[in-house]
Length: 230
Image 1 (spheres, rainbow, N blue to C red):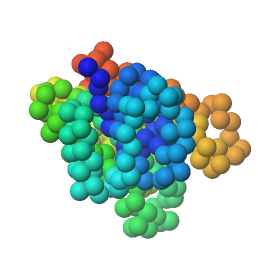
Image 2: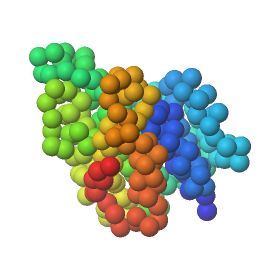
Image 3: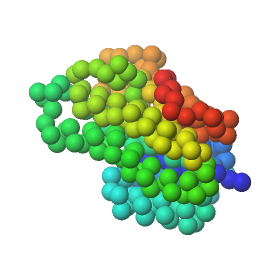
């Protein structure tokens, strides 16, 4: 039976790698997106044989009602939700005294609240069949917590705690919850932001997608609460 995966942030640099990998593994992949140009870029990369298993809809993943409607539509059309990958995220530099409330709340919303909203939307469907895989994207840079980008550090550290707490909460329901913690990834945005760095030392997004593909596989059915550093 074809598995159904929801990938938030599935049109971003990492998200596209995840989406393409899961499509390549034969899954239906459903992606709520916010940036039309990113969606067009993704569609251009999807092999013709996989296009029929990709669903994209413009949605605000920070909005509870919008995500509930999106997830409900997926469950209605495809009759199941097997996988959630929460890959939405953002980065903001700045120590405490340079971080205003707006920047603080934006990091929490992008990195933590989106994972909460998405998980809350999919868990009832997974609980109904006592099976499911949830993977969140954390950051290697916050283990241990670092200074200098306080809002980002705290929000990504909270993703780790959320992952571990949810893994315990959902263990009796047959649902696994894990997180990948990539170090600096080789993305176009990072190349622009750090032009003097050597991207050869960075993690290719495809390697992160491979790790996620394992964590959502049947082979990882007994792996939960794990923080996979990459």
